[in-house]
Length: 158
Image (cartoon, rainbow, N blue to C red; front, side):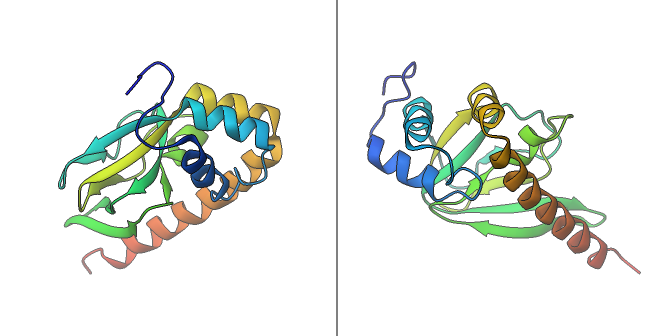
């Protein structure tokens, strides 16, 4: 894989398809989606590896091309399951939308995982040019954070 251009095994058309399926990014102009797709870096994670860890600083978001992953948060008695992600799902965007840049959950590969990552700089550039995309993504992020809060509350010991 050519690390500088992001070109790897996953064809550009598949990269664009994955980006076009993401709420908030789907409405971006085709030219911009093409630029973003070309800048995606392909990464592989073995089963069991944490791709992102709650509390760390986020510097990119991820699209799952192949495999599945669990999303958990830290509860009072241990990990709290939030979601299972599959091919086509995105994660890591909440940290990029938040001023602290802190990861809000841990995402761990359930199977060998192939992801495409987009740098914070490329993400910010796209959102600066299309503020409506930021609003769509922020609305989705707020819903995810609310669900996280509710799940943590329901798992607290009484």
